[in-house]
Amino acid sequence: MNGKTKLKKGDQVVVTTGKEKGKKGEISELILKRMRVLITGVNVVKKHKKSQSENKKPNIVEEAAPLQISNVQFFCSKCDAGVRLGYKLEQDGTKSRFCKKCGTTIAK
Image (cartoon, rainbow, N blue to C red; front, side, top):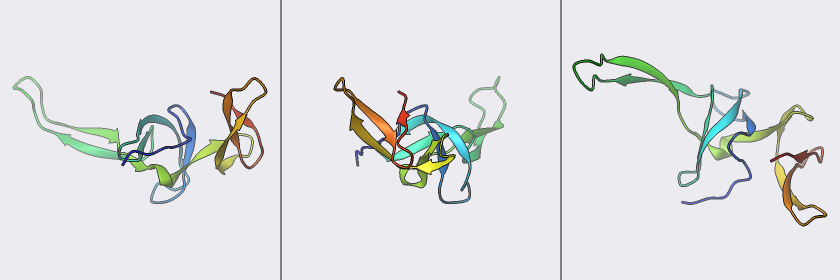
């Protein structure tokens, strides 16, 4: 399922549900085909890696696991909370995102 979202790579978000609820982080990758998002420092899991060759030893690696987009919200620094985003047309005809709670325009 391909989806749309108002979130972009590099946005600050807050997790709204699950065991990671309340944690903040930056979006490092959007996976729109699966409607998932990778957030740095949130939902970190341990992966056991096998040895690929005789030179490389097996080890345990920590990496971020994807979360559903519906479980995160954009974090507005002015409101200091997770908020919904909207689109509005500027005077010069460009489309920009804004915080629906306080009305602040979000920089690209």
